[in-house]
Every structure is written in structure tokens, then in C-alpha cells.
Length: 433
Image (tube, rainbow, N blue to C red; front, side, top):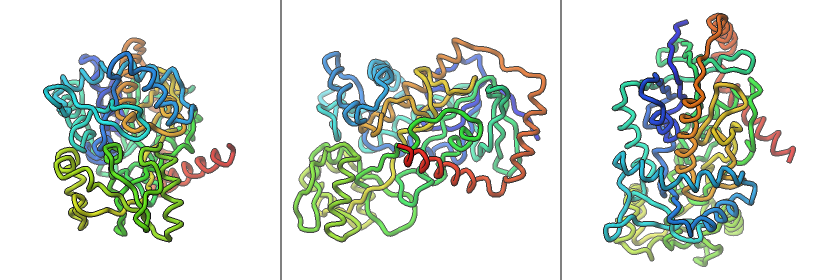
């Protein structure tokens, strides 16, 4: 088995992993590996926008909106860190060329469900793609960062609760030991475990299964957010998201009788419950979303990609109502981390949707995900840099070989085994509440 050595290994190439890489000093070697193509992360799919503290007077309402959406199960310290870090993150993104919408020469702000005021910056209806593509472009200028695609993490290598890297399979099916002083899990969510999801299907929670096997602390892994409005389709595959900001701008929901049945800017879990109730009442697998009152200029200016995608499905949203249905969307739980994104295993960090730092509580507030991922991705990088400790052990080569031998015993079935282990643990935690 080949060994590849690096200073920092980042598993995943979404926004949190890329932002972490950008905050690691240029004299440290960084290797990023991803299970699929580099652009195939859920960060690229985020439509609505990214929250930001508009000014000091916005702090209390931003905090309250986040806590209220999270049913007050949030870790207040983490929410505070995220909010207070937001202006610096936005300035940095603009420095990387992120093109946020402007109005009269100033940054434009929109409002989404459960926000008490407009505080969300956006780029059309593809904010995630705009941010993540610019981060990726910047990462690719860094000589100290290498990206490898189609590399699947199989297990981590550890001794005495210290992580030394991971064993992974490359695109040719060959196993390799990626040895690192520090490892950051940035592997995204768990949408691939579900039939109906807005996520990429290869995001199957492998890091959670590996964490379970190594007794790494998890937190709230039964907290799974359903997005209330995805475009209804009978076709297999990922569901197309109809952004929260569509309803934030004024779109309405109707039942089969053509009447409104809920407040469209309710928190996602509550609105999902109302939609499911209406679907049951109507005996239909969808409800209707009406964007027409937004007007053609707003629809084509703010939501051009939603307009185009719906047109491909036969709906002109400037004239037609569209059928929408809830689908799995976001994972609020994950690998437990502290304020610096440290896991319960030494030399192992977790960021983004893979981690649980407590920001989201029981239900994520719209457009907090990109901000949270960036804030805590940067904090992981800064913390490990400031506390750098060489990761050496004379037995590590043998330990990696033993890890690989154990993997070989079940390698053909490993994806299915990991899937079952994660789903079983989610159900166990849910029943224990």
C-alpha cells in the first residue's frame, strides 16, 4: 500500500474544506481529497444566500432568529462566534472576487423564512456556486495545496485516540495511506442515505460511520432537516430545490382548493409539517407554489436558474404555479466539535455539515449554513496552525497496514455497511429521546 505524506489532510472540497485550506500557512503542505468531482459538493448547490450581521443593532435579532429556528437547543457560544465573525468573512469573500448583488452601488440584502429582517447577501439564485467556485479558484492558485478527485475515504488510522490520517481508495481502486499531522473531515451531509433529497447521492455519511467505529463523539445525529419546497417530480435522482428566498420575497403556497394554508416564512420544520398535513388532506403528493406575484423582472433577475429549471420541467413560473414537495435537505447533527472545530480525537477536526458545533440547534435557520461552514472551517485551520505539533509514531506504518487489512475483509460491502450503521444509529438516538 502506497503512503502519501502531507502536513494537513482535508477530506472534502466543499466551502468549509476550501476555506480551511485558505487559512493554513503557505509553508504547510495541504492535500484535499474528494469522493467525486471537486465541484460536486452541496456547497455548490446552495441557492438562497449567506447571512451577515448588518450592524451592531442587528446582533440581538440575528441571535434570536437563529435560536428560535433552532428551538433554543443551539450552543449560544457557537452562534455568537458565527455572528461576530460574519463581517470579516464577507470582506474576505469579496476579496476573492465573490460578486454579491448590489442595489444603488451598495450590497443588497434579502430576507428568508424565520428572519425578522433582511440580512442575507446573495448572487442571483446560485450563491453557493458563486462563493464555492471563487474559493476553489483561489485554492488552485496556492502551490502548497493539492486536490485529488475520486478518492474515497475507507477508514482513519489512529492510535491511543490520535488520528494519523486515513486509508482511502483511489479512482483505480488502489488503497493508499494518506498520512498527516492533522486531518480535517469536511465530507458534507447525508442526503445520499435518502430516496428524496436535495443533496448529491454520493454524500452518504461515511465520516459518521467511521467516527462510530472509533468511538469519536457524535451529537444530535437524528436532527435532519427537511426542506419544505422542492420541485415535485416522478423522475429518480436529486430533487431540485426551490429556494427559501422565493417565499421570503413573497411567493405563496396553495392547497388543491387554491387557498393558502400556512405562513410561508415559518421555520422549515414547522412549514414542512403544514405542507404534509395539506398533502394528506388533498390526497396529493404535492402542494402548489405561486411565484407569479413576484413579477417577471424579479423572477428572471433574482431567480433566473429556478426559472430556467422549471421551464425545462414544463412550468413557466412567471405564469404557472409549480408543484412542490418536502425533501431531505440538511444535517444539523454530526461529529461533535468544540469552538475550534476539534473532535474528541486528537489531531482530528471536523467542519461544515459533517460537524456539529451547535450553531443550528434542532433546526437550521435559512442561509446560516454557508456562514457557519466558513467561520468554523477557518477556525479549525487557525487553531491547528497555532497549536502545531508534529504527528509521529514509530509504529504508524504497521498500524496503517493493519487498518487496510481489516478494510479488505469487508471492502466490497463497505458502502452498504456504513450506510446501515449510520441509519441504525440515527434511529437508535431518535428512539432514545
